[in-house]
Picture 1 (spheres, rainbow, N blue to C red):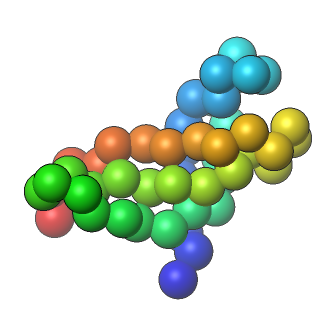
Picture 2 (cartoon, rainbow, N blue to C red):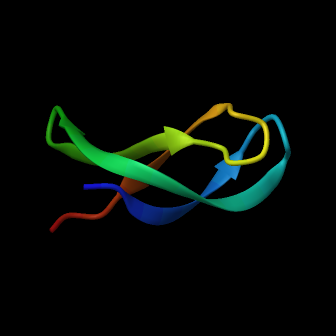
Length: 49
């Protein structure tokens, strides 16, 4: 189940939309995916459901 999220790519230094999956670690929800331009891993911390 990959959804689209907006995150900051450190390598490109721009905000981009990326497709990612939601993971939960230590009570924190996080969307993890890759940058569509350069392929660097991106993540975004999400709010509580």
